[in-house]
Image 1 (cartoon, rainbow, N blue to C red):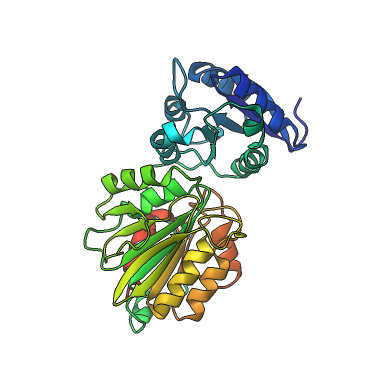
Image 2 (cartoon, rainbow, N blue to C red):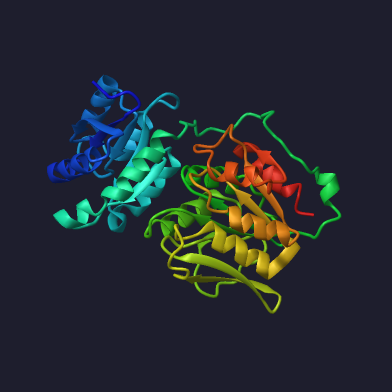
Length: 351
């Protein structure tokens, strides 16, 4: 019987060794109980129905039914939250599809099933399972108009402010779904550039940018050193690297690097937002979407102090209402909007 308040986890992987390591790693935490394991997608669905876990750790490449098949078979409401445990070199495209299909976290599994490498994942795996346990299961379809909109500055009142040249977006848990909803709703004639910092492991952002580029009306690319960020284009920070923007000779350019090494997340929302505030002052809008923690608060403060604007995702649509809440509690947000309304909220506030 589960301890009161414990997180019930089902481990799904076609490798017996991986199942053993993941189970042992998760079982070291007092608030996690591994209630079972499954060897493929079909067995996973049977165990989910039988054991009703809170969280499923899911391999993507499995016989009989793969991880994407499992995700698509889960109910849109009331099912377990899913953490993908995947090999990025071969599964990056599948991992991105899984995140867009509703998985809330992703852990990069080493290619080689060496004992020490798999056990190194223990801390990250536990953190992400606990984060997923606190996530809200959201349907992927378009959001209905919501009364949760809480703007404290009307579009009319903002017209006297500087014209926005750059929108910077920060997000974490649930971010790929939110970004898909936001970027695919932006018009092809978007008059400003967009730069995104998403907490995601290295190896996945190229595939994410490629899929979003296919789905959105605006061009989307993974940022590289010195790329020109033209109006109407979207740059996504490379996983494992910080993204900064600079205004060089009238052009916006992207710059990638590892500094600061002590940032809790890489890419860091704070690093992106602060660079945007320094480069463009009042011509920046920051948008903080679903995510755990408070990355983005310091950067949002820099944007606001420079005369820019900050919008946050409303609790009603967040998978994890952490990052937006932290910005709102710091009294930095000019308005909170459900993700289905965010694109129109941005467009009406570009100045």
